Length: 212
Image (tube, rainbow, N blue to C red):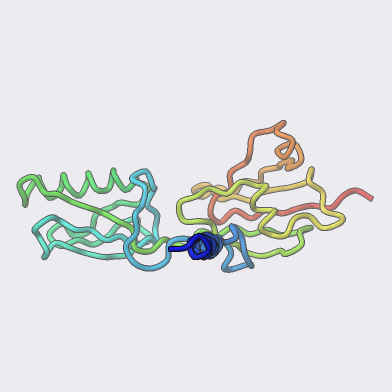
């Protein structure tokens, strides 16, 4: 192979690698009601520390026991339906905790040393809403296994308007049967004078106006 041919091959290889890397890039936030996409359909690798929640679709398999395999959506009561076991509550548990619970229930009455795997095939939609003085008020989806803080949530909505006040932000949050109103200062967080505030699913963020 001549030197010029080697050089041409090298240039093509570098260009191909750059194109592949660029194709994998994706924005962290997009438009309302479809903002932060993550996961999708089909089995995926999920962190053992991921906390299961109603609406997640989970797939359970038991080694060499095909009849016990199941795929079901976690109901509002936090439970899934399984062969032999019936209703098993898993919401609020991590993937590893839910796996251990199912393993224990099967070992108690049905199988000797069952080997259980649990995975998530579809994540429940986790949304937050940003209202008030932001460029794109609306509802946004959170990444399936990632957290979103207040600054990221406001950035998702396009940032502040000309009269948006970073010192006058409230978050409406439901905890159990209680509705809470939390007052925040995003400028203090951006300057690291305060800790980042993590947004939870169904939070409603309202950005106030500057005093004129």
